[in-house]
Image (cartoon, rainbow, N blue to C red; front, side):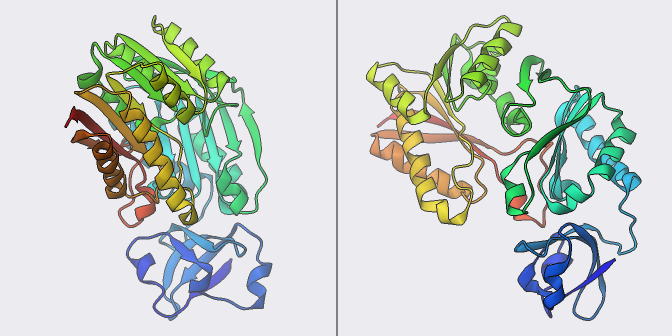
Length: 391
């Protein structure tokens, strides 16, 4: 196995629990670049004391991800099965039905791996060269623990491009294009093959559970609705009318089918979010609750300022559709946007609109997306529940 050694004083972060080592923290020579991406490696400090076993990509700035503390660990299907069993125990404690994120990368000790469970089916994302090389072991571990009817490899995410990996979608066993799932008793259809990410966003499950106290008897607008998660949960909680905005017609069609599964009717608007919000204002429409849940608008640090303005513009437009005593639910899944920065945006835009703002509660990613206490990057989702008042 490849042996890698850190430079002096570069072991502190790993000893504190982090799982990443960058290329500039490693002692390397000319042969380092010839290592096959994804190769397993033993990592030690500059004195040769073992830090564990992981995998390496010499062509990436984030070069090493640790898998185990022990340098003698055998990274095989049985090892993956033990990690998956540990992850499964948490999710079974959290949820009554088998619909959740089963594996959340570093937080479950499996960096580069995401697994979402849809009952008898699993959707897997292998985001790194190391996990791609371990694909057979990942599949073996899942089959040993869950015996799924089918596994869909949705290996078409942006992280793979950074790792120099090709995009592809591949099925192991039988996997339908669309599956039904349950979220707190509400039925949804998730497009596994053609949808975003794994087909569904489990990370907002717990935040959508909070809707009950805000939406009963309310007119609800779900911006960036995708397949209608917030809107249809609102209808289930007694909203009198729900409207979805999304730029994808297939996503809106899936939202309509999900609404019908539950006996609800919803309105859908296909348009870019800002354009749709401005059109609704021109029509003088108002809503009692507006949910703004965009995709990550700040994916890299260099996008920060532009992303801030985009978040500001969206929430500014949403505020203009709310009457006094309305509720704004403002979300961000951008790791680079701190909760405090989003709060400042909400304060500024409410003041500019001549409104007072009360923050009623703050949500984060659902518990099936645990945070690794040594890796701040695993805490990413923010959701502010705000009451909007006249000045």
